[in-house]
Length: 86
Image (cartoon, rainbow, N blue to C red; front, side):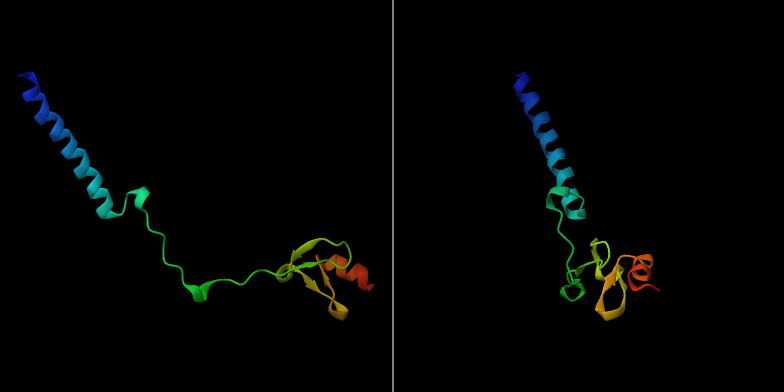
């Protein structure tokens, strides 16, 4: 007899749990089913070119390098001035 009373309570608890989890999926809050954001292929960055300082041989991105004479690149203005004698 007690199982007849316990069974509806267990089913009610399961129904509430499943309903709660279902509402998270609808709202997109379930981390297990998180969809990655769309990536714009035109916004992809090209790989960064790495160059070497002509004076100290430190490797750095070309965008951070200081350009010198004869197509050489340096890691800082001080190294460029030291190497070029300016």
